[in-house]
Image (cartoon, each protein chain N blue to C red):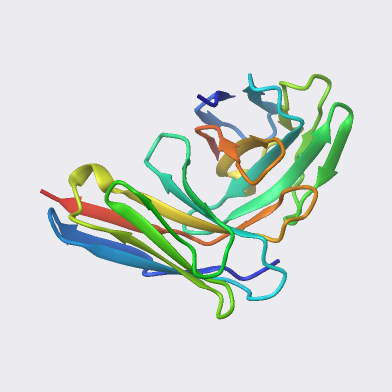
Length: 113
Length: 111
């Protein structure tokens, strides 16, 4: 089983604060890095699929960067809102024909009004 | 919009009972997956399927079994539930490309 690490494990911020999380993954056999947002009692929602070293993606106030050579990705949230409260998961993808993903434990974000 | 459904959403059951967790998708995806997540831990792949009549065990050993008789349906069965099976079970599907679609999960508690 591959090792995918996420930090911090949990984060509490005030509304309006900007925040970021880290995902570390193996730097070999890289195909893609997935970010998901998972609200309680809902389905995990895909945020980004990142494939190229140096890639930066943005969706509203959320953005992500990727460094495949050193094996890390950052997720940034600018001006956090209470509705951003969720668990943010990253998953490493080796590009197997099965499409298997290796998940980190997630960062649980709570945004206080 | 991707549609993948899981029932029941929550299940509390006694030891020794047989249970089936349902998963259905309406997207016609060939690949389907079951993940298990214990509290505070990662999602681990326990079963997958390439298509009808194709099922394989995943990375994490599981006493559950699965079947794939129809493309849209991928149920998971535990013949005799035990407290160690208490966990969250997520179903997912995918087609060509990196996208994955997840169901909302079933939270199982075995007393």
